[in-house]
Image (cartoon, helix red, strand yellow):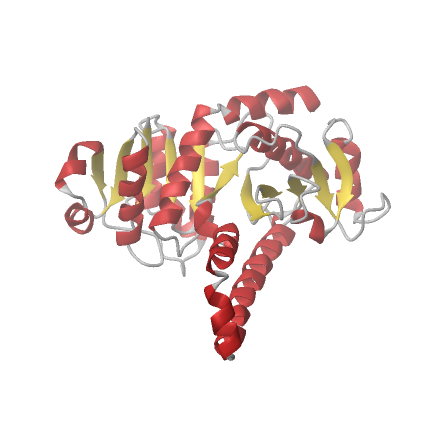
Length: 327
């Protein structure tokens, strides 16, 4: 199994990305292809991993400040080269912590969509009170959607939840401003009517249901989904900051914290994005994982594991068959 890693696009340079690849190679049997500047990458690879890592040299890469469409013309950039390799079947998956818009645009235009899928969607994992993960689909790929798109998001998310996350009794809900059938807007109501064909659909859900373990697949357009994602990250960071602040402000708090180290460790693990690594781009005729720009080594390792898991579970074939069945 060959996984191409865009090794140039992260916020913190190539080092944490390569470290994540090394961690993944210690646990999984696959061939890693690092796409980027050989002069930068080669010194980061220990001798014992040299036979399992290939470097595809290219000096250009898309920065976060650039527009996504600029990637279409930059044929020597690391993400363009990686996606081109996926298109040509030279690799089985692509993992990138670089420009998410560039990755999505190139994957859609170069690799193409699964037959029956009108738009790909970013599928991000969210923490739940039961320790498992729910899925938000879409988390930023499509700012404006039609009801047909939301319908497809629900089906794709369900297949990922059941096959990869092992939610065997997964439920699908449409994110709205109330649980009642009359709530939402025209597009969500139309999508709801379409999703009634699927036995796992439970109707409208509200924002709190993302975290309360009542539903596994949360369907929304990318505008709403991205706001949900960024708001959730902000709330999690704020809670950790306030806990530290209040603990340090009191001797009793510091003393009590010594007895709650394990509790804090579990909380951090549950809300840490690095634990799940990245967001699959569902609907693409290939395996593409989009990582957070600030991904550390653990995040990159887990993103690679996600890519491998989507391949091992034949998620694209299952999406194709499910779309064909319910459309």
